Image (tube, rainbow, N blue to C red; front, top):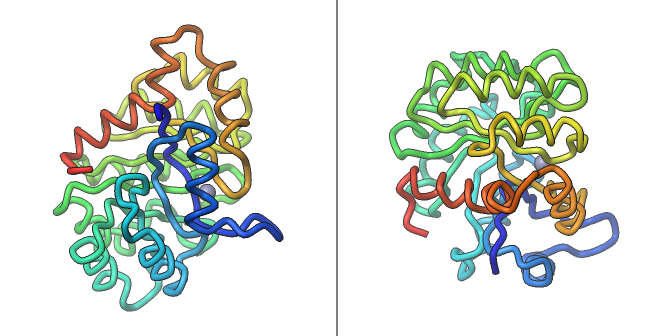
Length: 243
Ligand SMILES: [Zn+2]
């Protein structure tokens, strides 16, 4: 095993069951050692199902709780997931859950917990809505310098260059290239080779597709090793997680 994937959801793929065992099989055949795993929605049942399903596989799945800051019990629940279930980070989706990525009073209670426990925040960041841009994500990341932020989809179709800029000027911002064009990924890998993370967005794509994209995007083996796992391992070590 040698690769790591920073963006995987536990969710069936259309009519195909993609439970933990099926996912492990796909990971094994693609030589994926570890993944950042999150549910597909912020629903309570999706989070609880994922945390139950990965028991015994903590060496392969690094769990992220998908929280909606509108849920009245989200702060207590997130703290419980971190303290009792080994959750290592927070997944935020400003588009699906309908809030601006820089709405401090909504996000601060959750990010306080990330700050306290040295966690990582994966924030959906695309150009298909006016509330999830890289510049909005940057405003939040700057308020929490000790929390690392992963801009999932790195600005989407139209804002990849903004995502690259904010990654370059903020030590705590990382990029994942899931669903992003090869040309944008190439620019990101060239500009930020130490903070780019391979992300497949399973179940919507396949590991082999993303591995090929990484091979086409990297100019040399050293960069390829970083983006396909080295950077994620370095992030895990920087966060101080025992995995
Ligand atoms: Zn995703």
